[in-house]
Length: 182
Image (cartoon, rainbow, N blue to C red; front, side, top):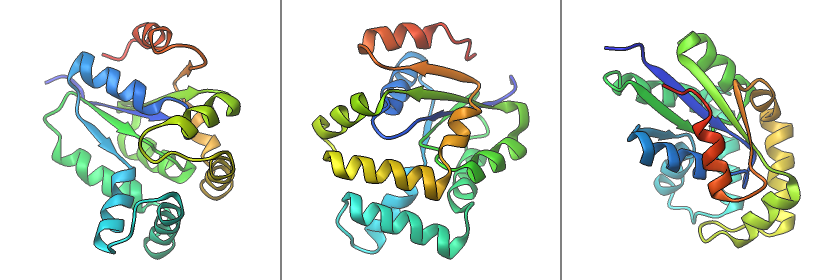
């Protein structure tokens, strides 16, 4: 078996993380672990409506109750269960602490792709998306919260690869294809 790779796709809300992940899944049939599922699992357990306010409250309370690394540790457990997979995609790694934990745990097996889009482009996408749309005020508030509370900019700044997503999906796919991920 080849050496396993764990590839985290990073970016602020609306940058295009899901587009990149879905493209890689379709192209390579790689499995995905979604960090946000930890939040949704907890929201379902608490019988909370899935919305931005509840998502933020649950994200922050999980970290407060179980520590800054709760998401990374739960994701690492899921990665261990997929040890037969050659490549595993991680969607929505948020914090600097999570990044450092996974980098230390997996070393050179752990790679990151940052997806960047301007705030104007991201806010437009977020407002128009079908699932969990955010208005301008909600989108800005989420950005500030994720940057200030989770130090989300750190993993993006330290990414192994950068994809600027300001144009079409086709253009983004061409950029993805230029990265040697295998």
